[in-house]
Image (cartoon, rainbow, N blue to C red; front, top):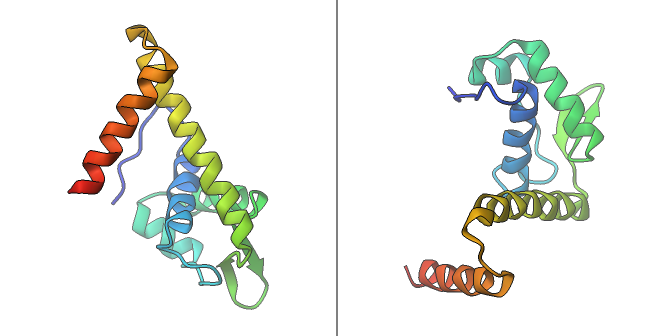
Amino acid sequence: MVQFTATRPIFVQISELIGVRIMTGAYPPGSKLASVRDLATELGVNPNTVQRALVDLEAQGLITTHRTIGRTVTEDESAIADGRQLLVKQRVQDFVESLRPFNYRPDDLCDILRTCMKEEEAT
C-alpha cells in the first residue's frame, strides 16, 4: 500500500504516481490500466479518489478512456515525453529552491550536478 502525505490532495499524489509509472515505462504506451476499483484496492483509497486522479491524467493526455475496454495509456509518445520533461523540470525547480539558502551560483550547482551524475553512471 502506498503512503500518502497530508500536504497535498491524495488524488494529485495518485495522478503523479500513475503518471510516473507511465513516463518511466512501467505502464507502456497502449497498455490497459487496472480498473478504478482494483487501483483503489491496491492504493488503499476510495474509488472516487482514483477516478478523480484518472480524470486528471486524461486531461494531461496521458491516458484515454474507451467505452468497452476501460482506460489505456496513450500511444502518443510525444505526450509522454512532454509529461516527462515537465515532471523533471518541476523536480529540478524544487531541488534548486531547496538549495537557495546555501547561496550557490547556478554554475556551481551545475558543476555539482554533473559530478553527481558522473558518479552515479560509474556505479
